[in-house]
Length: 252
Ligand code: E4P
Image (cartoon, rainbow, N blue to C red; front, side, top):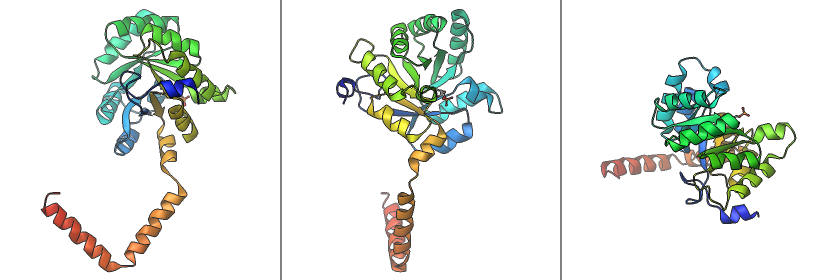
């Protein structure tokens, strides 16, 4: 086990105080958030220009609705190439909803914008981070979230788990209490487990991967068997109905 996993806590607004990884949903689809927020496991959301470009409707309305549904940090991304434009867009995006986190692409301009936005109290998600050094610079600039793209690293035959491990170890233990490592570009449930094992504070997960993490044929078969066995005793169904009714009457 790495030093990072043993010395670092995870999953909080401020890194290092709570030991769990929070789950965000990575999407631009309100319908998808409506469906998956009902599971009760989401703490936030991330969008990006590519995800929003697939959707019909006003991007502001979409992002506001997602903020309401997840009731937690929701990243909306700036698209300017220069720091001044990024800051102006970031401030404007923050007026959409109290849960908005300004997502800034990693670059020299992105660092300068992050410094200015975070100094003004705006949370920033530094995105498109692929190395520990980029993560270090992002943390130094004041980013609240540092998004490491696992799937895109694997696509170019770089071991994303090694990079995430290096990022976690580079930032912890250290003086970057505000910086949370956010595992992004997750393509399958293995990425999700790896992010948790390595001590990421957050993983942003596409709906498809969340559904894959939900399903197991033995779970489905087990539920079918329990249901069939219970139904083989009709008097049990009547007993349970009565139990539910009396509990409701008693207000339990
Ligand atoms: C993160 O916030 C990004 O929106 C996202 O994870 C990118 O994933 P992709 O590589 O599947 O596009």
